[in-house]
Every structure is written in structure tokens, then in C-alpha cells.
Amino acid sequence: MALQPIIIKKVKKAAHAHHGGAWKIAYADFVTAMMAFFLLMWLISMTTQEQKIGLAEYFAPAASSPATSGAGGLLYGTSLDTSGNKPSKPREAATGSAQQEDAVRASSPGSASDLEASRRSASVPANYSAIASLRQALQKLPEIAELSRNIVFETTKEGVNVSLVDDDGRSMFREGSVEPYERTRRVLEALAPALRKLPNRLSITGHTAAARPGSTRAGEPWTLTAGRALAVREVLAGAGVPNDNFASVVGRADTEPVFPDNPYIAPNRRVTITLLSGSPPVPPNVLR
Image 1 (cartoon, rainbow, N blue to C red):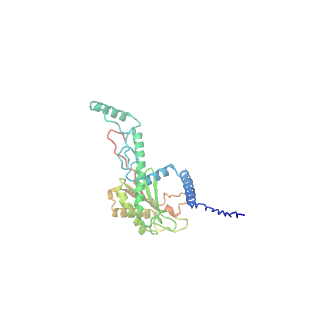
Image 2: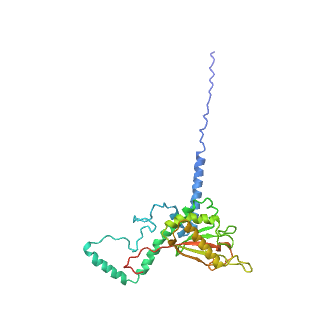
Image 3: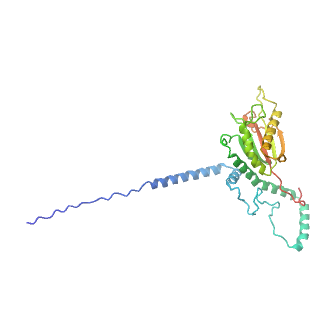
């Protein structure tokens, strides 16, 4: 009787391939992107239109111009006439048509208002460009993070305000004195080169907080605020800002508080440098 061979089957189980952690990284990237998206949506809903324009101007390259005219510069090529640039006319008809346009402009009651509107629209990008230049100048200060609450930028009808504001626990001037602290002097010296390059004339105004009832005021408010404004002018002039760039230096005492409901708090003490919006050159045949 023949022996039946014994067959032994060995089954080898293949190990599962190692998938790694790539899916974890992809998921983390997705979650991060969603968080950034919702944060961006929240910021957009919380900012005003002027703040959005200011942010866009701040992050825009300094050498680029938002206009298509190719003129560039602070005014971005904005023309005085709201109709924009026009092609040149034939030489034969130039004299007669120019006289007709002069007569129409002289008789039009809306010429002055149209020109004023054009001036205001031209100053908007210039103001935000000025703020971007000043902010960039301050980035060189190592202590700018600590002083961020003491330096306030804002646009107004007159132009751009740069205010050196006192805060609880941190003042820009010595108590009852017109002498600025060293940190205040460094801020002004950092701003001076940018102010020297800008075409705006400067108006410097000193303000102080009201004295609480029953308290003793350190210094006469009118003399104090005027002296601090003069001290700011002297620091800027010493840092290279020409004397012709200063339009006025005044003290307002406590007559114009930032917080009228609470005129005693520290932020009412401030010195404001206003970059006055300059008027574009006006042709002699256009009414002012």
C-alpha cells in the first residue's frame, strides 16, 4: 500500500500598506483654511469702507498706481475736470473752441462746486498714501509695539491727523511740562523724513484734559498746550522739516476733548500734527 504524500500549505498574509500621516496634514490644512476664511469674513463685516480703503492702500506697493493714467504720484493722475483727459483737437478749431469753453465755464454756476468735488476726490488717495508712508517710517522704532496706543492716525476734512496721545500709565510729555519724553522725541524724529518728503503743510495743535473739580492743575492750560505744540515743531524742524512747511502752531487748552462725556481722562491730552490737504493747481480760467 502506497503512502499518500502529506501536503502542507503555508499561507503568507501580506501586511497592510502603511498609509502614513499625509491625510492628517491635509485635514489640518483644510481646518486652518476654513478658520482663516471665517476670520476674514468677520473682519470684512466689522470694518467700514474707509478702513477697507486704508488697509488696501497700506498693503499696496509704494511704486504702483491705482489709476490707469500712468501719471502716478500722490494724486494718482486725477484730473481737475471730471470728464477726464481729452484728445487734442485740430489746430484750426482750437482757438474758437477754447474761447467757447471759457465762456461756458465762466457762466456755469456749478463750476466752483465741481472743482471742489474734484479736489476732495483727489485728496482721498493722497491721504491714505501719506498714512502708509508715516506708518512705514515708524516701523524702524524698536519700541513701536509699546507706543501703538499712543500714536493715532485718522483722516479728516482738513487732511490727515497724526496725534501723540497720552494713555493711562504712559504720557508723551512730562507732567505739567512742555518737555517731551525721549520716546516722544524719537517718534517725531522718525516721522520727520517722511513729513519732509510729503507736499502737505503742517498744522500743530496742543490739547490737554480738563481738571477734575477740586484738583490742582499742573500748569496753565493755554500756555501748556501752546508750549507743547511749539516743542513738537522744534523737534521736527531740528530733524530736517523746513520752516516753510509749518502753517500754524496753536494751543487749544481743554476746549476740544476727544471724549466730551469724560473730559478728565488721559487720552484728551494730546498733540496733533495735521497734514493739510493741498489744493491742486487751478487753471486761471476756472472759477474758485
